[in-house]
Image 1 (tube, rainbow over the protein chains, first blue to last red):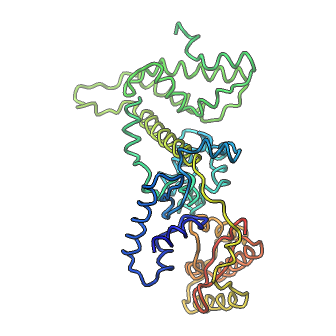
Image 2: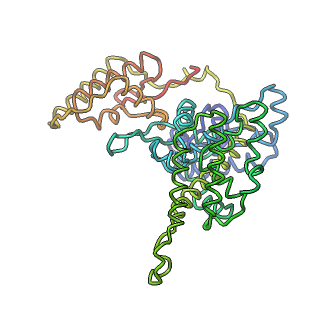
Image 3: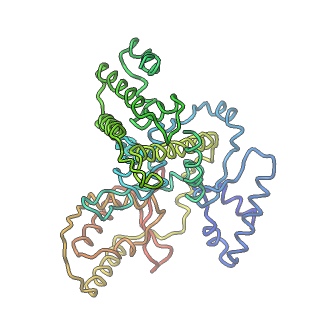
Length: 174
Length: 255
């Protein structure tokens, strides 16, 4: 079963969720699958290879190890991807922690209009419209997408450090 | 202020050379400028020398004006906030001895909370930056198109779809809800809505999409939006087997 799991994670385009293995092994107990998965991933990551299996967006994905990025990039002849601007990252941080959030609420925290940053984030599928707030004017509510989790290598939103940690840091900085 | 020259050194160099402020980026908004000024003064955030900071802030604004930079309204709003706080600090607070433990709130505090909140999210943004950095150093296997067709999933025919829609309408009529259709949602809006939902969920159940709708017009608009998305090849509809629930999911871009 573990060998099959490894193979499936290898061929998958998106992170493979434990539930998806349940479909492959319908007779297995949920706990057994999870246990086998964990043992396989730990063993895989313990070997000193060039690949590793990481938990991203609630599933498992096989990637190269980050420490080899220079050589891989040299071989692929690619440049680092265009990164998000600081304005976009700040806006994204507000959306991630305060979601669902309106444009006006983002403005209040950043003290600055954020429509263009938000637009970029929507275009890059990092942020999605999740509804409308039931107040006057019914402003659009924004939230983070699955692509956000994948882009930042997060397993779930719970993986983010808590805001209190940043508050602590902020009061030390000022 | 005597040493005005080096209060805003970041701005001086580029303005002479190019006339364009590259440094606007460094101070993204008024809060960033204030944080910068406060840090430079090395003062206690809870005891900001508001007169000095206001003066420096206004100087900065003056420079932006001189450079003909289009200032967003928030810069001026912050200026007026600062001046307001400054004036309130000048007015002797009815420092009646009875007001125990500084009952009267320091006029600066609201601004301080705002600055701290802003700094908090700047830190969170830094964290995202680092994470992005790490993710950029990692590759996963590029997708293989061949795998797509191997799925043993039943694609839904138009006939199945119409049947399912008929079922939805029938169930709806049974419910006998009062129609108060003030909201005129267009097909375009609905398409956008479905697209957004698919950004968050990998798939949506056909029944879930229609389940929450409370007017017949909405039902039809939603159905048309779904058909349009299928026609544009953006979504595909499938069942996990005959007579199973119809699922809606996004088409892989490179399929």
